[in-house]
Image (cartoon, rainbow, N blue to C red):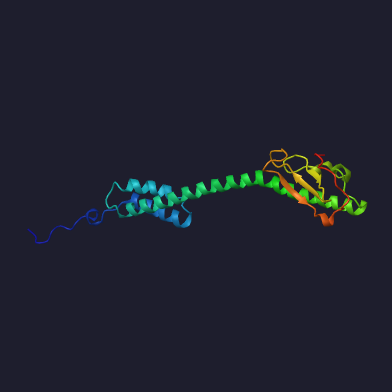
Length: 192
C-alpha cells in the first residue's frame, strides 16, 4: 500500500459556490450604484433564493443591498407621483390666480388711461371699451369695478366661487385717492 493518498478529484477541491447569491449581490450592487435602484428588486429576489444554498455571504449582502435599493426606489416613486400631483394642482388652481392678477393689472391700467384722457373715472368697465375677454378673471367671472367715496377706485375678482363678499375675493388693484379724481363719489357698480 502506498503512503500517499489518492489525489482529490477537481470537483472535491473547488470551494462551494452560490452563483444565485452572487448574481443577486451583483444585480443589487449595480442597481444601487448605477441605476438609482431600478435593478435592486431583481437583485433582492435573486439573493433571497440564493439564501437557500451555502455559502450565503453574497446572498446575505445582496439581500440587504437589494432591500435598501428597493425601498429607496419605492420612496422615490411615491415622491415623484406626489410631486406630479402637486404640480398638476398648482397648474389647475394657481394659473387662474396669476391670470386674474395680470388681467386685473391690465384693467387698472386701462382705467388710468381713461382717467388721464377724459379727466374723470369711468362709471363702469363698459365705458373703457376694451375687449370683453379683458374684463373676465381667471375663473371666467367678470371683474368688479368699484368707485369709492374718496375718489379712488378698486378692481377686484369674486374669486374661484364667483360670489361677491366671500373670503376668496381677490382685490386686483386699488387706486389711491390722491391719484384719482376727487369729484367722483359714486356707489359700487356690479359686474359688467
